[in-house]
Image (cartoon, rainbow, N blue to C red):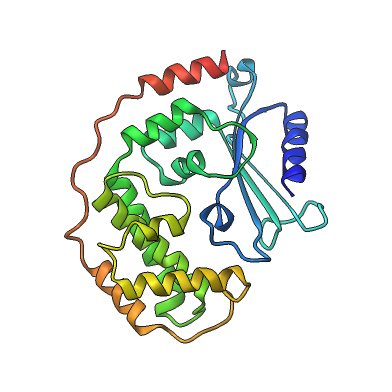
Length: 260
């Protein structure tokens, strides 16, 4: 599958007349939470020839394509390979404001094409805004919990993992004062003094269940896990209050180097 994705990237470069800086996995496979039938969530950053940026109408800054298991183009919803890319200018603007999604692209352990930019990665590590990251991950927890778990509309092990990934990552930002690891199990193993042992044990069990393909089974609510999420969502005392004071000089210099 990696070869197929790499080939798609090469064809996309020719078809769209772009250059892909890097293409990575940014879904359950990158998080170490994939199952036998998990799809591929490919994210990439691209740029165009300089003259394409010097025109009245700016070129599109987002490219989205998707494929089924047979390699045929299809709608994104229900696809097997879901690919979405940002123009480098859009990407860097988002990165400069500590958008967590763009940061995760730089940290993904699965790289399909190209190479993650070292300057961008150093900026993310050294200049991230803890306020932005904390509230992003807390919102991720809240959205999954309220929509699927608390409502009882779609209670599955998978939704518990997604809600708790938001919770654990938010607490990591507060207590570790660094970017959370991409592989979720690595994060769990470093949170033993912060998260109750019973919660951590259950999450590790769920990750094993997910790998066997049982994560989509409808289950009963897990009261102890729901209670812990409820307490987290109601408590804002941990929220960071000091943002980083970063300069974008290095990002601008790297943009010029890439385009020129």
